[in-house]
Length: 199
Image (cartoon, rainbow, N blue to C red):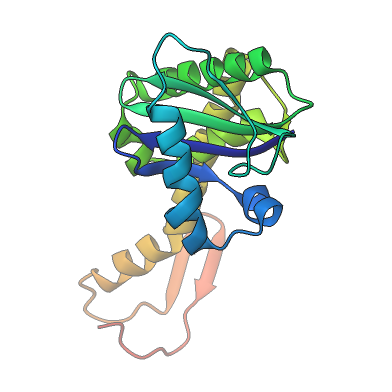
């Protein structure tokens, strides 16, 4: 089971974290997470040579010998997954690869700024892949299809949600000499009651 997912840059600044199970698992407060767990994880991962394996067996930092840190370093970002002993190390490395390739396709040459300014989209992509600590999908094309469908739905809902405000704004900006009493739109006739001025 995946307990936590962390992304941080070469300086140890967090760019993404899913820590709902991490806090409960290790009884960490938000302050303790930032003051202890994240710096220690960054120190462990960043000080390793590029030619050593990408698995760290559990210690006191990550909850004992039942847990592992599995990571990959791409350009300026570290992708770190904290998992229990039931997860395959190579499977998680492959999942990290799929996650990075999906981000790259969605953002067209993903960079650290994309993770900062589009954190909601990154979380949506991750939610298509992992939920509740379990891997849901590893097919990149299926993930991108679902993310694109979600983006289209968000855009259409934004248009619907903004329609009332645009209608009120349009009515306020109309230069009508007097308030209309009847509005006819096709077969629909609407009688307007006496209303106070919009301006």
